[in-house]
Image (cartoon, rainbow over all chains, first blue to last red; front, side, top):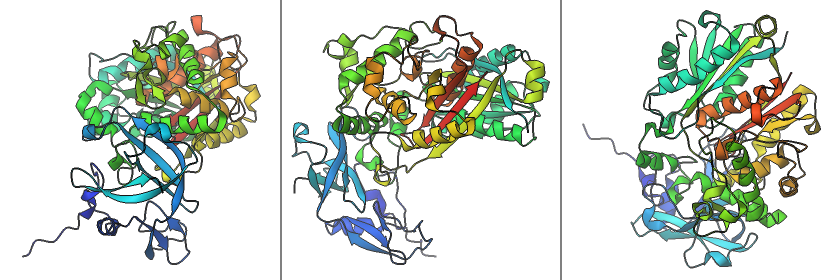
Length: 143
Length: 388
């Protein structure tokens, strides 16, 4: 009997991925095409980022993908001097949250923006990137 | 339906590297509570065991601990809401007693953070949030609270100096609490002295001095229905109000970054149930896992208006002699934060305060006290109001 193929695309997300199998695995395929995507409920129009495969507003699983475009306002950020196991080579790095009004995106600030230049309220864009270890991710950059 | 009273409280010393097993650690807090309650094992109808399971090697610790404490064949089970586990345990015990299912219930919280190696702990810390969408960016607890601190600073002009004042207060009382893990003084100067470890950055803008002390420890609260509490205890402390709430695990699912919604929501519920307002609170224990967390608790619980927490600490109103004394046992910052034991330890402190038995930490004649216990980064919140 042929071995059942396992769709574990999500293990490619971030410096260290703690999830391999999810119904939102297409997120990774879009990342490979350079696109950061969220989901939208086809029934009630609810918008989700991070993407979800099920809508908790109307209990439907009929979702479509939309692309994160334009800029979001920097809500907050922090530069880490210590990281968990597996993130040592990335240090120091800055985690942050952007507000796109209809949804928010959590991620990291690009290393080409210095910490001193960051300010709550500034506009940043979300862009796909490939990490030094070959993993896929996205990063916040100047527009 | 009658009231539910606390008839016994106990806790172990909070220490680094407890020289014993988790069942032996749990025994310490339980023994003290049993002696305090002057009750017998056969009188305890059920036990609730609380901890954060990621630090435990033992699978399903409730049965193992209940057996060691002599609490079999009574029912026992496990409750988990990370750092607020034992407060959630108290909530469940309250509802079991109100339902008439049991007369007396013991809530035993414990955590042996040193049960796992520091590299194992580091690995688990990376999974403390949404493991699918946020942990892959390398998140840590201090960094999440640092994001709240940054947002608070941006909106209200709060400074690192304002936050440092909260740690200085905690260390003032940690020194007079013989159960505290951190018994040393912390000064404002240490936060700006590059030679001092206190000033060293963990996650900007938080420094080592802004972060709580990890510890091993246990706590125990014994609760009884009104009839039993009155018959067995000279000074029962009554549960007047209970609040509990939850929040989106990922930051992207939230809408407030200058406070914790769970603290606000759980506080509202507890005040309403007790029929009181923040002004009625005489003494409080709040969840100061980081200095910014205590600052937000002042504002979320209504001790200060949003943005004015810094004025409350600057005027020393949260010191022992102030209008609303907070964390007069050293708090999580200095007493220590053995996750599953923390809520029970907060309850114990308030019970001792209301009985007038807090020794050097005693606040002048309090009648109503409050505990505020947060799980995760504002993922869960419990607020409990107690009265004489």
